[in-house]
Length: 381
Ligand SMILES: *Cc1c(COP(=O)(O)O)cnc(C)c1O
Image (cartoon, rainbow, N blue to C red; front, side, top):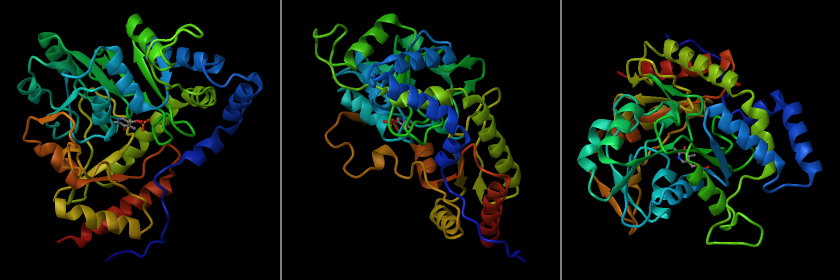
């Protein structure tokens, strides 16, 4: 017998709740930037870059326009370009591959691990050729890829490693930190990311002085000194965004703990569901649940469950229902190679559903989502 429960609306994002919770701190930083009169490459950007680098225990943070630019500017600064191959996955946000193509390199796709959905290290070596230059693991949904295995492969074959960390600030691996085992870490500060501003932003973290210097130059029209240029671009993190991010960085640990608390509540509440798989946290890892992604056990159940949730007021979504190699017209004349099969990545794309996940959720909302999933689960024979 289904109980009649009161219908609620559970949003997917909590940006405005978050703003209200720390409004005074954000407003003070915005005010400071406004009064300073320095809005591009000003003191607030330098301050945030120092804080962000220190937070990660890394030498340099360079603020750029967005996470996509962070990736391709890192590739350029590391000398990756036409003729070079970068190995990554197809079950990620499109920008991971896009950045490889913007840099002029070839994207090589291998399968992901069936439990973490991050790149499967055991699939990498079969994809390596004399042109392979870089491995690009994505810490998908907030769970780190197996960086120790990736580092071993990179050392053996003399490859660069660039981490796409748009989704996993504060995550940890079993015995490693983000940035510890790679050449550069790229992040995005778009609103919906765990550390997000009111608009676009991104950053590259690196311990290489020369790489940081190159990115600083590339983001600013190839200029290190006023009026002196070599070829570059315009991709900077504005001081207003840096001010917002500086205020929010002070709360990121507490917000991460809240995400983990909601994830634990979801996982406990949903453990009896028969037709879905729950997210996995590898032993010793710290998953930061940028997204709380369940998978239906059968692909034909995904759209009905998603529709059921949406009809019952739960704003669930899919990340990412169309894998990169399944996008229409792939690869659009861009250099790409698949070293397949991509069974796990395709299953992930076909079965994924992201439940609402943000620090400002309430117990009532989380429980309503759990009940709604369980109601659907009971309708399935
Ligand atoms: C968000 C995201 C990006 C791109 O960031 P933008 O700031 O939107 O350009 C890249 N990779 C992954 C995995 C992302 O989630």
